[in-house]
Image 1: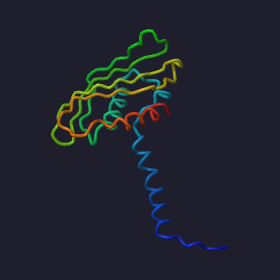
Image 2 (image 1 turned 180 degrees about the horizontal axis):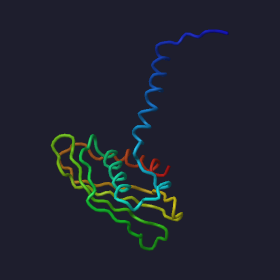
Image 3 (image 1 turned 135 degrees about the horizontal axis):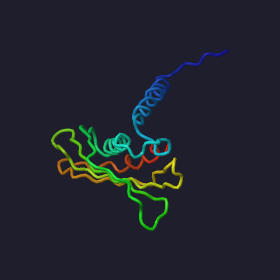
Length: 146
């Protein structure tokens, strides 16, 4: 049996591996699944969807709140729905009560296991110099489809 020395770079890589994994799990915690949830039409479920999208779009939003939501059948496309959500959030510093609209495009072919096809995000934040993070918003599709 031989013993190998663990070098400093090796220790750092191991540390990043161990630390990185729980962080990702914590980020996905609380993110609802359109494939697994039976309560897609509840305000609680939609609130979690809205919160997940706003947190992906903006750095450190607070007081995220759904004002209204509705599922709409897409014309001329069987088994397609749009989840339209309007609400508000407070920005990290100055922006307060920022009006926000999220549209989630869904394939509802399997009535129990819906699939998210796309997410559209718009807000009226005129204070922030940063634009909404479109990459993080689109990455949520995978998580919503788990």
